[in-house]
Length: 344
Image: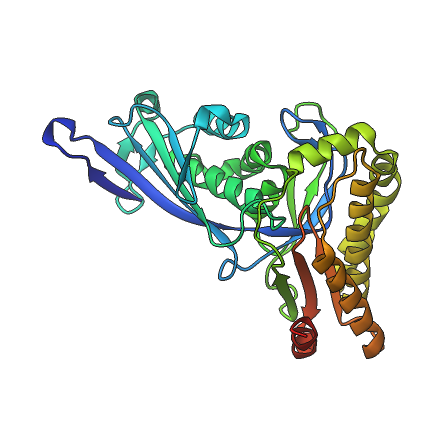
């Protein structure tokens, strides 16, 4: 937390700023479709791996001051209209409703009292170090970063961690999973108000150190159909999606959690590939169909299956979110083989 003042002298008001970073996550059993779009309640539960922030991350700085006339947000150097984004407004609203005192972390001095926040506006500057809106969960990292940064700025206590999960979910559903490391489930919940629809850490980042993740970026172009638009069309038109959510995902989730806990790589890889394939089949079953994978994506699928067949065991698994870029899972001992195959 830093404190500075604005110039010129007649505008000297303190500016309170802090910077945090947040990881992205890649779903191994995917969420696709909402039963309540307003507060992002999913039609099925999901589970993901959180990627190391050394590689993929969002860095967000939030600043508050009485000198700011309105809330503002910059994403990757371009200013966005805060008031045009229902999701951003929801995160601001929910965090502000829980605001406490902002204290100096070193001295404990109260810098902003709870009842003083109404006079301050906030500026947000957020940068991704990886392609945005290209199927690498940039919105998950972004809204997790925004939620966590605002919670620290507004003095929310650590006891509200479960509520932060719900607030991040209102920004982007999968953002709730980026608030924890390791292997993280997002339980869909049953309540209409969504208070039980939140993330749950299944295993921490130290559980499986041999696990390695490779991201193959085949396109950094923004996708033509957003995840929000694509999943709503799927909900409206795809019979396969309804069957998947009700009949396939619950059992598959239980298998995946058990396989990850026991470090059964062959089973984890099989389940993630089957789920990725079914997710994209659901997109094809949507009317009109939604295409996220491209020819390079399909070549990676063929490469992985050929590599596993040649090895006589499962040494690699793939998954594709709503975009053409591949995420591969492997083990350290197989990493040289997988890297060689990916570079051919």
